[in-house]
Every structure is written in C-alpha cells, then in structure tokens.
Image (cartoon, rainbow, N blue to C red; front, side, top):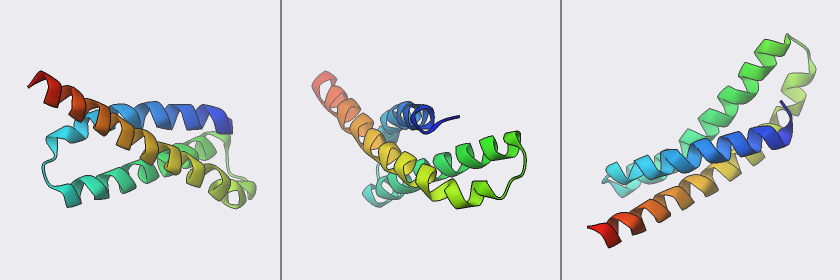
Length: 93
C-alpha cells in the first residue's frame, strides 16, 4: 500500500466514524475519540500491511512518515464528518 491509498482509506473511514460520533454526548469523550481513533486506525493499518509484507528493518524507520500524516487526515475528516452530520441533524430535527 502506498502513502496516498492509506491516506484516502483512513480519511473515508474517519469521515463516517465522525458521523457516528454524534451519538457521544460528552464533549471530552468526543475530543479524545477524534484524536485517538484516527491514530489507532493509522497505526493498525500501517503495521498490518507491514506484517503482511513480511519482516524488514525498514518498517520501523518509515512508520512516522506514514502514520502521522494519515492521523492528521483522519482527525480532519472525522471532525468534518461530525460537523456535517451535526448540522444535518439540527436542520432535520
């Protein structure tokens, strides 16, 4: 998997998870979920692909280049998903 594919995949998943965050009423829990869920998804995706490809010493060296931008994109899209869906619920309800 290359950098762009992971970025798009994490962004799409986090957008829809952001929509699901409308159910969480506590603001502190929302903030923690917005930060940690994309990080854990990025971490899991990177190391899952590294596990599938087989062990090499390069995976640990390159992890920051992949995981951190994926996390930033995930946090951004999760926040956008939450914002868009919350506006939809306010207009509808």
